[in-house]
Image (cartoon, rainbow, N blue to C red; front, side, top):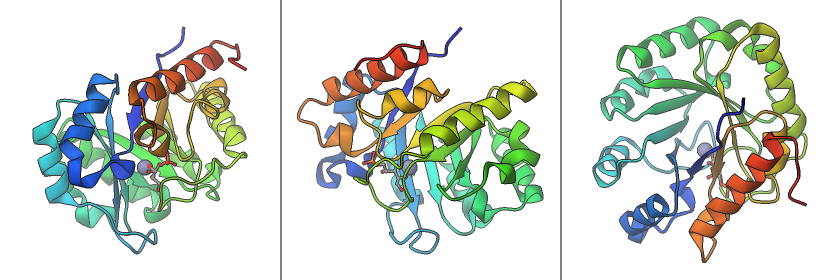
Length: 231
Ligand code: DX5
Ligand code: ZN
């Protein structure tokens, strides 16, 4: 049995001056979620959107909002983001100890929001072992967080496979998301290793035919998930 591949376009690569149109376009193009990259200029060297943005975004789309918090103090900011009632909020493992991880999950689940945990490319998966069982989703960053349009880091392929193995051994089934440099060329690499949720920014919003871009990523992921290859 395989889970179908979810595609979560990152609106960091959208046209902010025409954001509503861009969001409606990816809705029609078959996006499953909308990925929202919140950056604080400290945890990552970039500053993007915040709570008012997420609130307004929710009024223009019925797609689930997948909020990726790249911020230093997630516990401090979390109540405001929870108030926006997105479907899922992902925090970074580098910003929390294990007790705080449990607190985050409790706060999110209390409001019916799914809880995700993200790991930067250099963060050991061992660091996730103690809390692996509490998360609804694990996000393997396949670029250093901060900017869209970067190249996929090839060792992410092994990290995804390693994470899947750890989950399998322990009978755990979190969603496995990958974010950074995902396109029709790289989707297969991570889905072969067990990823089922793909974030893509420039590969979707930079394409002239966004529906085709989403279809290509999903097709490459689906074929690889079933043990085949498109190339
Ligand atoms: C990077 C962000 C990503 C980024 C993805 O810090 O978390 O979501 O927008 O963009 P692409 O797909 O262009 O690498
Ligand atoms: Zn992201």
